[in-house]
Amino acid sequence: MTDSPYLHPYPSPELERSHPFRKLRFQRLSPDEMNERADALYASLAERRSPRMYSSDPVPRSLIEQAIRTASTAPSGAHKQPWTWVVVSNPETKSQIRHAAEEEERINYLENRMNAEWQEAIAPLGTDHHKEFLEIAPWIVVLFEQRYELLADGERKKNYYVKESVGIAAGMFIAALHNMGLATLTHTPSPMAFLTKLLGRPANERPFVMFPVGYPTEDCKVPDFDRKPLSEIMITFD
Ligand SMILES: Cc1cc2nc3c(=O)[nH]c(=O)nc-3n(C[C@H](O)[C@H](O)[C@H](O)COP(=O)(O)O)c2cc1C
Image (cartoon, rainbow, N blue to C red):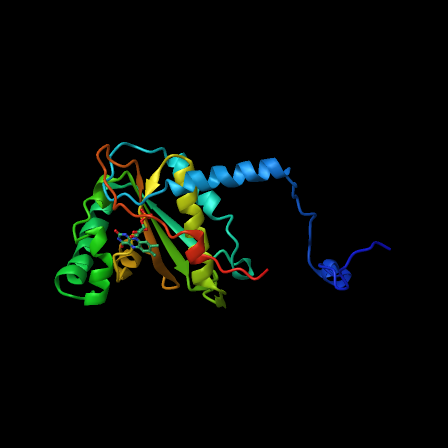
């Protein structure tokens, strides 16, 4: 007998007889290495920003693919991986996306579809309905959430915690791009149904976020924002 504190170990012998399991690969690090890694990732991600001016300099497709692979390691409800990543470099398609996004944003900004409180919240960003970067950036990656799973025979299967799962994957995508020296903007020109149509996606998929990806222009500026300190965002029960 071991001195395991677990009265109910996972997986139970019965579970392991009916479903495959494998040994977890996990490496404990030294305290020094843990601190070094923690500090390095924080220092790197603290430098991440969302540019709105992109250069047209090309970015290899392999980097976009690797960022999507990385994002797709995200945890997801019932391991359903309820996401589709549509990767666009075609100039004509980018142009169509830009013009459709600008039309929605024109209504948001100029015809008051965004209410006063919302407009006030985004005033420090100074964004408007012009979205030239959607044509200029070398890539647009559109992340779709799969509201339910559509099997080949047309049967629907439920997905679980779709928004949470896709949100986590989106965050990992952003971090992966930043880590490889690329920039992106989390862009939501809502309503985004035009993307389903333009990109020919099926009815079970809904646009979640679109990401222009590339390098910022040399003279790119971003709002002079600070992030909330830990004392404002963390509550402790010791
Ligand atoms: C869910 C979500 C939607 C966003 N939508 C837009 C958008 O449509 N247009 C835009 O310019 N920025 C958008 N942003 C970017 C935020 O404005 C930006 O992340 C925030 O101002 C902080 O700046 P930073 O990312 O440079 O740290 C969005 C961010 C999130 C998380």
